[in-house]
Image (cartoon, rainbow, N blue to C red; front, side, top):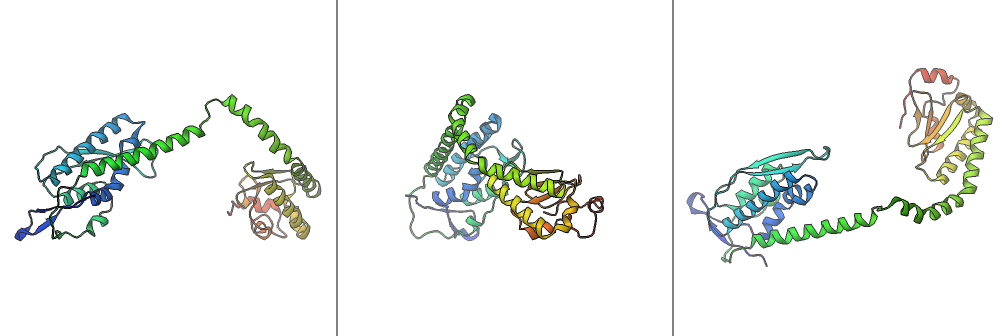
Length: 294
């Protein structure tokens, strides 16, 4: 059970200010720990060692403050991962700590790392009526470290199970499954090829391509929609003669003149892609450099 104690700060008029409890300190510094914890720097031994040593000194310093013992430490250095930056890019932060106020120490650490202090700011500074024994910050930090390492081990175990140790064995174990799935789509693939042949032969389309990341059933559905669109809007299909159609993730016309159709779009949205301008030759559309609109 975490406890609280009160101390006399260097405040005017001898105002009593209480320490933060160990639970409050742990909660306030949690985002800081997640930014500098040594386990996050496994591939970078220099940064890992620096953060580990600084965390040990910070823990000892806070424990000394809670015990009302004076302790001097050199500036603490921490490497922090940079958001939206390539792996291996770190920010080096140096924190100068002194005094005997735990709250001030926590705020300094958070401010140095550009972490919000709103949680600490909301904790009242007036002391409780009853004086309790010294909180065990080291125990709270150790509990956090144990929880962090446990989560890290679980993540490692999951990644290990997913990892492929031997590619030959993996292929041998999964080849039959892949073959069965491929054979199960035989009829669908035949329908896809038949629809492509129909579009090419009927409208003079040079080639029909599609993103292999899509399920073959989605490809078939998109081609069926395109055939229906061609029947209803036969006049604009002449714009596609000699051109390549690519079924993918956006609708529009590439700078090379390929017509892209988003598989998940409805047919009316395909017509707004720039290629289906009635009465305008496709060459004119292409030369005006219409880029994908989605």
